[in-house]
Length: 112
Length: 113
Image 1 (cartoon, rainbow over the protein chains, first blue to last red):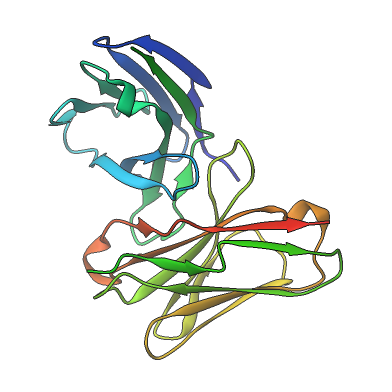
Image 2: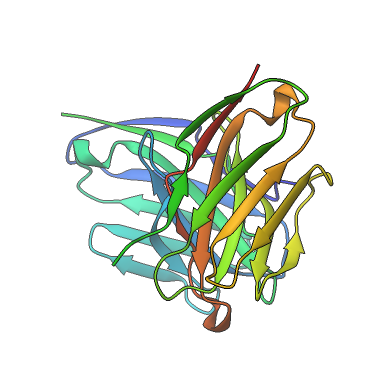
């Protein structure tokens, strides 16, 4: 069922560094690409989202880069902090389709 | 402003039993979706309810069923539980119109023994 491939599975970054997580999708009907952050014992929380009519979206330290022709998108976390340590999921959904497809997740650890 | 609330938080059941999970959507939301999240995996879409009807369904067997009530709250029922049904069950609410983002609850951890 999974149509969104996410990498890496885990990532260790030093405090202040840049964390980069990548996703690739197959279905060209997808038109909404969110990123979710999940802490242990909690549900996923929406971090940032992009639609394919723009190539980049920035909110604070978080940036999504989107490459429509390559069917890839990525999350960049600038100045990574220990509080950013969590599991991050990319996702995708098509227009008029409520079935949100999630990647398998990336476990980010930011070392102080 | 209350977010999405789910109950119970944890549940242990035996193979073959039936279970009911409950969800209250975020205030103002009218649509509820259910997801199954296996350990170490991303959430997988089970189904979505709007106006008390199942609107879309993922690749899950008929053992999984649901209901939405007039106050927009929802239940997920799973019959004839299998060991493989052990997972975190997440409820997400949204608005039907405007393609609003999903707001997730903290889930119900179901363990089938």
